[in-house]
Image (cartoon, rainbow, N blue to C red; front, side, top):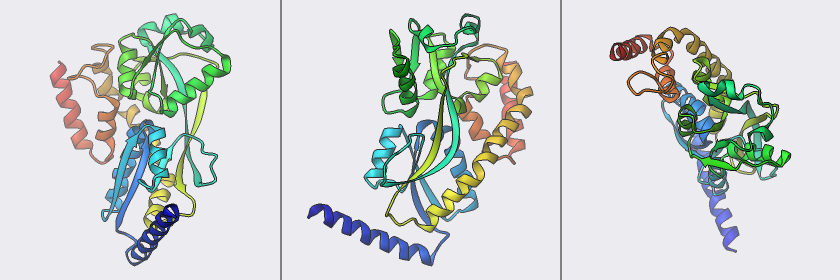
Amino acid sequence: MLKYAIQIILLADQAETALSSLTNLESGELHVGCGTTIGTYVISNLVIDFQKKHPNITIKLIIDNTSTIIEKLIDNKIDLAIVAKRMNDSKFNYQPFFQDKINAYCSIEQAEKYKEISCLTELKNETLILREQGSHTRECVEEQLNIINSFPKKLFELSTNEAIKQAILNNYGIGFLSSTTVRIELKHKLLFKIPLKEECKREFALLSPKGKYASPIMLIFSSFLTKNIKDFLDRITFLYRCLKIFFMPLALLERKFIPSGWLSEEQFLLLVTDSTSSTRSFIYFSSLHRCCY
């Protein structure tokens, strides 16, 4: 009886939300949960773009590992989840969003050592650096290791992509990361992609509970994401190329990140979220240049 009572209360809340949203389609709030990788490197920037276009809509964004986000969706703590995990569950609507790959990376100093490596089994005596349990990135790597029945003797577990990148740059081991997270490091030859034949391709998707009222705000936001994801990624790629002249002198100072002379990818994405901020970008890069020389 308690279960049905909770469902009735939820339906009543949804009905009230539906009636309210029909009277004001361009205001309200939406609770969105994202996996760590897509949340940090993609969705956070698109949310800012969205709220500039729709200032009366508030997006409350939660970024956590995939398992936690799915739990929050099941518990009705968020309205929409954006994760890479394929859900074969009839309780959810599943809308494909975009794809990326998970690859193995070493520091550029170790490229010569690993450039001929083509199979995961050849890395069994190496130190591997993975995300924490509950991360879909970790899940993908473990699936590949299970397929070939090969497991590393040494393994470091870190909870963020940036921590893994720092560990790789300091030659602590081989890290597995989404291709979305290493654009700057590859372009400026800080990391080397190990040419493994095993490759994990994954599809990010928008997840929402079936049977739950999809508010106009959710539909507007979902439509915005699907329409703008390609433009956003193209814009970032274009700006990486345009700003190479600023990055290269700083990168050549040292092969590792240095606080006063190198932008992390997160800083860079924050900087270019507003593509019209050319003056601010120039001042910021100029100040870094003066700091280093």
